[in-house]
Image 1 (tube, helix red, strand yellow):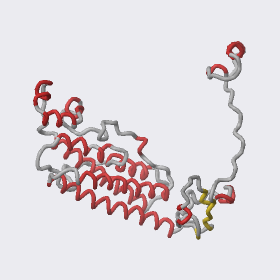
Image 2: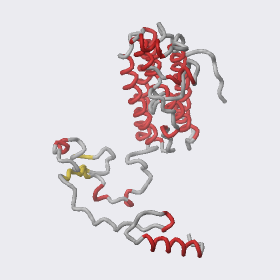
Image 3: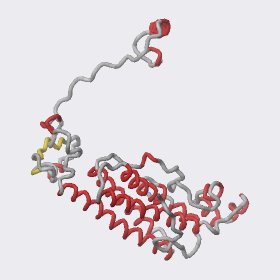
Image 4: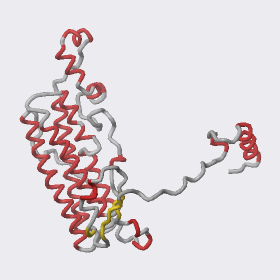
Amino acid sequence: MFFHRQELQHKATPDKPDAVYARKLQEVLGGQYGEITVALQYQFQAWNMHIPGKYRDLVFGIGAEEMGHVEMLAVMIAQLLEKSPLGITGDAVQSDPTVAAVIGGTDIQHGIVAGAGARAVDSMGNPWSGSYITSSGNLLADFQANANAEMQGRVQVARLYHMTDDHGVRDLLSFLLARDTMHQNQWLAAAAELMEEGVEALPVPSNFPLSKEDRNVAYQYINFSDGAAASEGRWASGPTPDGHGEFSYVAEPQPGVPMPPPTHPDSRFYGTTEIPNVVEKVAGAVLDTFSRE
């Protein structure tokens, strides 16, 4: 059950309207690493989780907080758009370079579609997509993905912080940056605890038998670039993080194997092949005659 309380976790009031900045702020609301993504990502992970207890409670709790962050950003964007102009003629835009610049930097659909409100889109107006969500059912994989989402989101919020001098906006972004700091550390701590308790381990998925993979290449860094400095990295020598092997460095790939010949699907896919066109037509007709699939 969800219950909405008409309060905000933190103040979300700008000093003044700014329709151009509202468009920029849409990225951390409806972008790939925005608050809509992480809120629903965590909820789906919790709904799909196979074990009860602290990890499920953790994910439900943080998912609920992120819904609050969606709300704060939506409220902030709406206020930034509150004084945006309703109707500016072409003459006005042409006669006033400042107005032209402002109109050129806004999301026109903020007004036309949303009536001066936030939308579930990124800063370029691309609709938010459920494909942004990672929810695999493997907690170690998901927690690492969550940490990455928080890192990418914090990078974007940090950049947006320097794109405004509005104290009210910066106050909200400062709060969101701090929560992203917590969430990054939280997911990394949760991933580490999973491994310490033996719930999951590297490599993910840890319950897939290592004997079924080609162990000869499991820990080789194969250099597919003409840059040789990669050999100096921690990934090129020494013990592997999963504790099951030693890294090795291969300066260049081994010779490959021959490419298989081109495929020849059913003639009724109408792909172009080296077979004469008339033959392809006859083959398709024959297959249709005998109802062959």
